[in-house]
Image 1 (cartoon, rainbow, N blue to C red):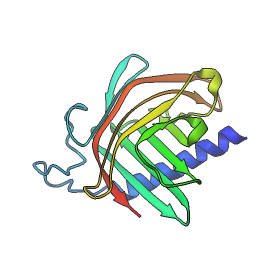
Image 2: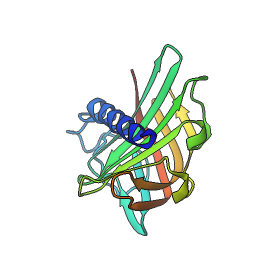
Image 3: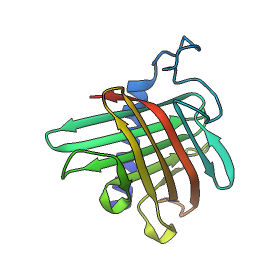
Length: 176
C-alpha cells in the first residue's frame, strides 16, 4: 500500500509540472527558454538518460516546479519524449531543499510512465538503489541541474526498469 501511495503522489506531482510548463515559450524555437528544443539531451534545458540500455531524452516538454507550503518543501523535475514521462521529486518536511545527494531514505521519489501507460516507481529497494544528485538549484535564475540513477518497479505486474547516466541540465524552474 505504501508503494501504491508513492506512485499516486508521483503522478500528482508530474501533473503539476506539466500544467506549469506546458506553454513555456513553445512558439519561439530560437528562445533559450524553449522547453521543446529537441536537441537530443545535450546542452541547456534538457533531460537525458539510459533506459534499459537505450538512450532517452526529453523532446516535447520538460520543467521543474518548486513549492514551499508551510514547512513542506517539494521540487519536481519532469520531462517527456512524447510517448513516455519521467518524474523526479525531492520532498522535505525538515528543511528547505538544497544542492546535495538524495535517496529514497531522505526524500527522493522517481517515476516513469512507459508507452503502454505502465507506471514504474522508486520505493522497493529489492530492485536496487536510486539516487538524485542536485548540483544546481538556482532560484534567482530559475534553473536546476543534476544527475540521477533509478531502479524502478511496476507495483501491479512486478516488472522493473533501470535508468543510469541520468542528467538534467539548466531545466527551467517555476516557483509556486
